[in-house]
Length: 537
Image 1: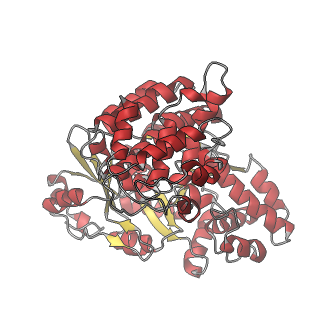
Image 2: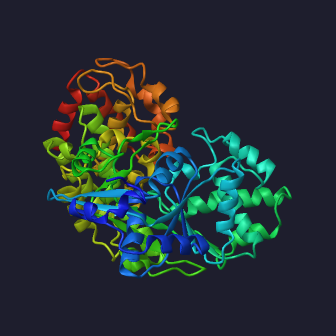
Image 3: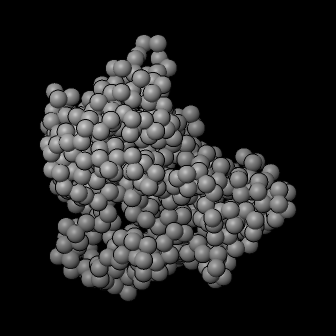
């Protein structure tokens, strides 16, 4: 059993092994998609393969859709070269259910995979061709929040972005420059309408995408590098929209235990690829069964009935409420809490942390007691039920190989949204007091303690990647367990950074509490555990 077009001709072998297969004429789907694509997605990673691609597959199976997806990769070209194309754009989705059951699906809804490389004339010309098609209704993105940024952690323009501003849309080097260039091609083809849909897990994601594209349009227009009408096109919501979305589905890195299941079924060629950019990619993706995707219904070129695949379309205001509910309270802050303290306490799986009495109590307090009181009910999803599912079904799922080390990636970029918004809500409310927040500041202190790179046993560990590591780590890197250093004097420059915490922790009276917690956690080995016991009792 080999995962490619030839290997899947033996459908009975795959079905006998328990795999759900595409139930449509895939060759006809590919031909129709290439001729008249309706959806191109940038970011050919795990979330896309586990969610969007599977939704389209289900709709193809049901006959709701006749065309599939185009996948484009702009960060790591080797994903397409070494994984997508050798497998004829097929992948295997392994859904790990909390009850122990495993669903295995061969997903074939990707009709074509492209490389977003302006130096590769063949690849880039194909992308321009796709962007000029009347049929194209949306371009979506899962490229992580930092994928939309035009600056580094210090607020300086990225060199590629700065060069693109001057060089124009011909052969841009930056990711957003390339996307803006493709959009300019669509403008030149007749100002054709399109929805540019960020599906990344970040607040007001559509605005982040718009800000990046608009900046390029503005710079290029000011420099006479594009027609003046391009800027007006980007700003015209009857032509180009940047809908807000809220996405939620946990898709950890492909796990060895899942690979063993597939190998036991007789599937060959499952060797993962670690690219030169250190991306770990495999022919399969493992994911939880829960999934949510709420999208602002703003599609100037129309859209298919994707709601029949479980996607929720609504007003921007409702998306905002759902996104804040999830990102600021009901899931993401709890994930980050477990990530920080999981690394400090030596855990390798999120599910194992949910067996830890102190950690379980901590996320319950942050979710139900500190966060939930300031959440606005969005109507389409109930906040308490959402937290219940997170803490009782999703996080404890023993079959989900999600790690605190993965979730701890880019924590400096997450704290402001995941906790800062709750703090702001307390600060703005006449009925609440930020002094009542006990465990959110403990997470901040825990993150600073994490940055020391020393776990609670006193052993060094590897920090997850973060664009601000070089900026913030020096404040704690020279501290050691048992140190009697003036903690507040050392941490004050960090605690004042609103770009990290969302607020100035001194202004709202939380800095001293953070420093106090931090001091307790550096007393010696075991101090993190003792601090957790003290404040979660």
